[in-house]
Length: 564
Image (cartoon, one colour):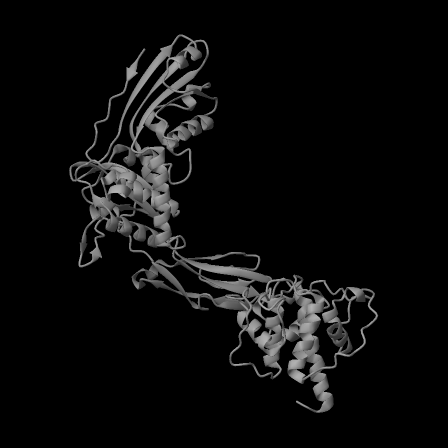
């Protein structure tokens, strides 16, 4: 029994044809394989493997291959168009999906049944618009273009507009109807609608935008265009008809992000009019005119805000363009165990930590703005440290980064920032300008404080050009930095004090010995038990208590001497 499908006509704007042959084969599978043009037969027994195997051959641009399926035929095959849709969707990335489907020029297959073996050999023959080598060129060139455009972190709207405009500027419609592929367009600068739709699909898929290719008719010709999703809805795009047109240097957007009520002369093929496709891709009746950007007004975007558990604050935003302000935003919290945010923008602090609260435009799904909060919860620190931490916080000198994770190690940069803040608090004269030769602090959050500390002599680097701001601060480094700070504030301090009889005194570096002794003498650092543990890192709460102890000690000394 034999059944043949009808060949599709070659379209003016699209290139595609297929044929189907069904037959019953009474010989063996091996005999059938010997008579096929395929280099071998792939053996599969489940649907996923069946689809993935065909997909792999298509991506490799194999012209002829055979896949033998052993199982229930109805599980993998009902009709050829459905099979090809499933095959193209079996892979991920910009080379799959609609791109793969519309990259095929001619296709045919025969489906045999081997009597007595319960085998279904599928023999496929394909002709493609491009070779595998040309696809590699396309991937490389598209990657280069996207690097030039620099829109990876932008909203979906900005990605779509930027790529759309790029294609409009750099390509022309091929009225000779010779250039169907993306490769043709990239190498000649001209292509038909199929190439336009494929290129837009590939570039936006690489950028993470949801996009489809739709075929049908436009202006009396077979035609292809795209639909893209922004927020809840899909919008029509026809880059072919906008390409190459501008007025006064302004690009044409006559077919850009159009709703169903304003996209004339486009009729979809029946495949794209089914209830299933329409339900999965609801097209907005109106053109897109959504929010392009969101700005936080209170607190300003990028500013760090401090809260305590139970505190609340109301955030407000500004949307651009103003005509879309009524669409509103959707609020979200990156960690609701730290802080929650209501639909109206009320933030409630819950527990200690850092959290990012984001306002996302409701109709774009991408345009957004964020603010970071630090929720200070001293109950998360050790019980012996809580009183001192509250006192130090009250002095207004603690860097925000130290107000969470109290048991974590403090870095050299963080401790220096705390010391410089205390220096200013205690009346020290800060230099108008400060610099250093450290090559590893450029752009660091505490670059300014490190340069100031170096200029004042509070802190030195690990070498003349390396400060290592993110290295853990050791106890012996902390002792030296504290004593150096005191010297800046009070003049030279006594560094001839005897070293306490620590059991690990031999482990203290020679350069640190006088500072460890002086810090002990002034009641700043007492060690742990009978050891000093010089190479152990200081935790944030330990380091902050040292500074609070220093502040209290110096205030007592000032009171006793009657000096300010």
